[in-house]
Image 1: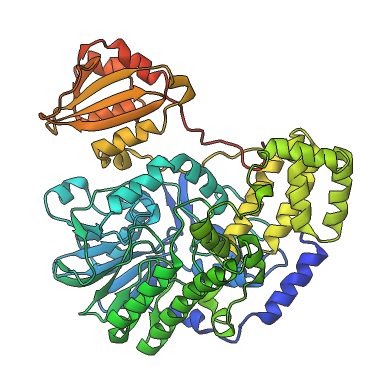
Image 2: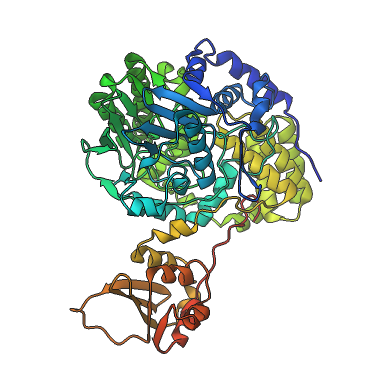
Length: 633
């Protein structure tokens, strides 16, 4: 079994140049990170009921040492700040839990309890954070829950701070931006398997923690691996300026769709002179397109909403906090912080468009574009999580798509066939490996990675190529200031050396499935149909939802699943079969894997007509693969 390579002389020299260029004289963040500290979780570990470790912040203790040559000095600094964990006072009546998950959980004290903002990723880490708060601020009930946006690290711990029963009873209203549920489902259910697999790379989920492995993710250290849950919102925020009071806590909202998430909102606490910026302004350049996959975000409107936040709230604020990182105090400082963040996203958008209109493609613009000095020299605009390189390519993709206009790229061979031809043209596998070794020894890691990728896809069993590619990825990872690039490179190296680690986290938990609408349930089913296998199948089934007093028709034809709600006015042909059941049972048998026959025998489903049609239907379903290959064919 091979082991990780050490940083090369080329990487060591590059790290030294980076350290000399970084603005270490600006140390304001060091004080801000420690400000308001009350207590840490001791030890900084969260486990499940059976003792499984779900979060281990103490494993990053090595970050207290001087920066090693295997980590970019900017990333080492960022990780050292992000790793600080515990309960912090933000302002009178506002507290944050930091360092117990990728994201922060904020708690705002009300008249009778506490309003929780963004309950982390996992129910277990959220419960641990709430317990830490209560240990120092009293056993206050949770009287409100606010989701800033539709990413799992901002709602996944919902059942760790409240219960569906309390929400249903009106004891804990749940607020979210309009469209929250639709987008939360689309991201975590529709494309959830592929995103979760790639998220394992992005967050370095299985990498050993240390100077040669995971040092963080830039936005936070990594993702917890506990139970992802979701309680549906009870109150939608539908307009900027909408004001709501929960347990005496007054909030004024600003909707920001299309920014860091498709459904997102900032909000202001007038009684605290405090501004929550969700994930729209953090201490890093964020992603226009995250490496795990997502909808491409719009940096143009992102910049506009930051300007709007400045004009609506910032000049009346004493403190700004977000769903990641540490707060910024002082009106003048926080206004300038937002202005630089605004200039950052606006500049990337405008200059990418300027250059693409001159005929440059995304990969070219990514190498050409340089940030203005005032922006580049601020710590919080650096690319620890997003990067100028992949954000520029994402902006190009948003406007121009995958095709760069060159006909040579219009119909290229797929990866394996392309790789075989490349290797043949370059003189065969042995010659490619020899030349790649020369490139590696010359420090040309970008080129070595490209040609070795051809060789691995052309000859999947070539062990020498895999080992050299692993070392190449490690050098590229060591030199990356961007944490997600580092994690991707090192995760690729890990799989080349040790085999696939699969998908460490799951997003399709029972509570996530439970909030799906009937339409979303059948949408999710449609994505599992093996089209060619179902070309000749014709199935017509009615699903009668007894607890919702509605009938939904499902039709399979031409390899496509069509569905719609049946109304009395429709003149429809008789179905092949009809099944009467509750929505919960529908989810169990169609998405959660429960046996349909067992449910019928138990009386949970009443069946009429030709029940064998269901066997036909189920027979064309495909299963997503959470272990698909990434660095090998």
